[in-house]
Image 1 (spheres, rainbow, N blue to C red):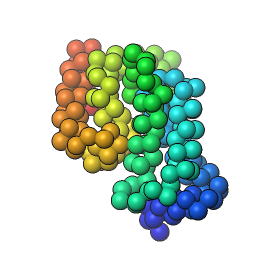
Image 2 (cartoon, rainbow, N blue to C red):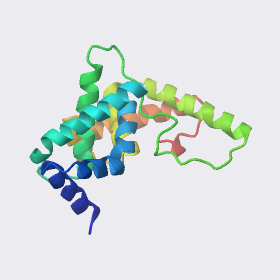
Image 3 (cartoon, rainbow, N blue to C red):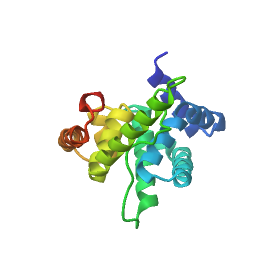
Image 4 (cartoon, rainbow, N blue to C red):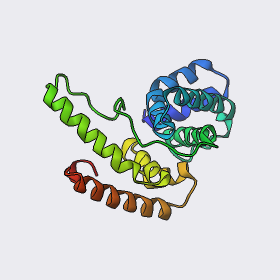
Length: 190
């Protein structure tokens, strides 16, 4: 059975009031939802709160899911909106991902020199991301870290696909320039 059918079935079961289905959905997507929430909030505690609020929204609104797209895009849209609501009133938003992101494979035993080099690369990448607007960092996080299509990223962000395309192109160009100026090969990052 394709994954999407299983996900849609989980949403239907949640809509029918099955708590086990919500637990299964969280087991399948909780880590990705948290990674996206922390990328939007920059605060582990706030990210946990955002994910919890999002799960409550899924529980309460699952009957409104129309099944027109992937469940992950719908879930990330909920997290996106809950994170924006949680941050309302704050002056800045953080960058795209943390070092503990599940999208980054872990090397079993890097040497201290490799660890220091990776840490410096992450710091330079983070500095490059900080130069981008929230909208541009959001598009990068959705497309590259969460693996959404441009259409799904548009759905999550609530803007047209053309806007997503232009934001992505702008973000990649400016991030590539920032990384090149910092002495990193932008090809491995962007």
